[in-house]
Image (cartoon, rainbow, N blue to C red; front, side, top):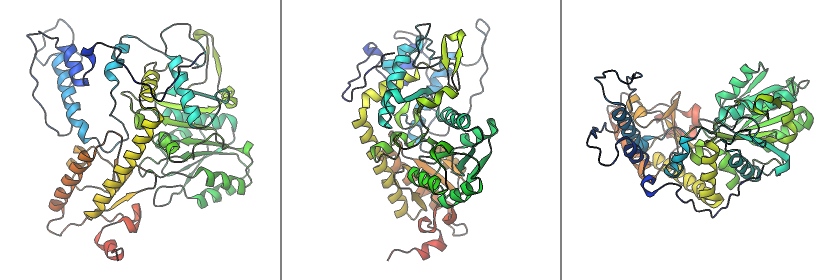
Length: 470
């Protein structure tokens, strides 16, 4: 199958009339309330507070309904989402993209990329040509030749992890899965699903794998092959496991290349690190890499990319006569829209645009960390990370308002491409004001997070004395 080119200087042109080039809210309003519709209903704004779940039921057409109409419910919902965009700081989703209007006409078609991306469908309603173009782009990014790789566009990072670890299990049926305790929960889900023996590796205070613990456990299980999940950007702290150190550890412990398999979970950072250094490369003896497409790049629906070595995929491939294809994927039927969204975004941004996004996010993350530190707030930022870890705000409503993710006494802000300095300034200003109320009488103190983020990053009364700047 031929692939579509991805040019760095590609200028996206609207596929729709000018009337479609609008925001999601206005796009929906135009459909729900056409121009000249005298029955248009006014919608009262709900403010910037957290979204509350709607009490909904499926309506039967033709029956009397005393509640709001379908259109009113949808417009209210759209208004709420639009207002909440500026308060989305705690989760890795890039909501800054402009292709929804241009690609909206595709929603009238059911596109299913069932089966192998590299084999033609028996029906025309697929986007495998777009999918292969996206896969070729990532193969080049992660340094593997076109004729040496296999991959597909997944439904998200979890599916990529399930696929990569399954490949390792099929290649090394007696292998033990090694993953750090800060790995994504889907890694341990895979171990349960596949009934694999696993070892949880300790981590340092910054969230990076403890390589001495890895070596100790590799030596304990030297008679069994090793399947290692390497996290390129841990979920909560953004720490990066060092592939080179892990490979050296395997060598030192006597594991030859035919006795280990490495899967790289690079859900968020897989599109960032190539523009900083080449730690993700198939020139090294790694087996698979997965990213989430809706995270750093951005997509209105969850998706991901999984790349592995072509020589490995026969272990999973099954010939399915019904679809006239070979299938080595997890999900079978796959969303045919997401490859087009990914292709469009990559073509619109190009490597230069992505590199600019990476630099801006890193700069903004450091800006946030420095501002919080200046205000006397406990905070940590790993090298090459856009995840700023801070002390957990005392008020649940504040956490919910800013949609923060929290673990123990920590919260984090993930500085995605759509996060602006203005948003960060508003967050800092509100946090500082709220902390004055939380701790005004001196009876309560900010939590000590020295054990969680390092004593040098903790601004509690005890550690602040120990780490006063000279």
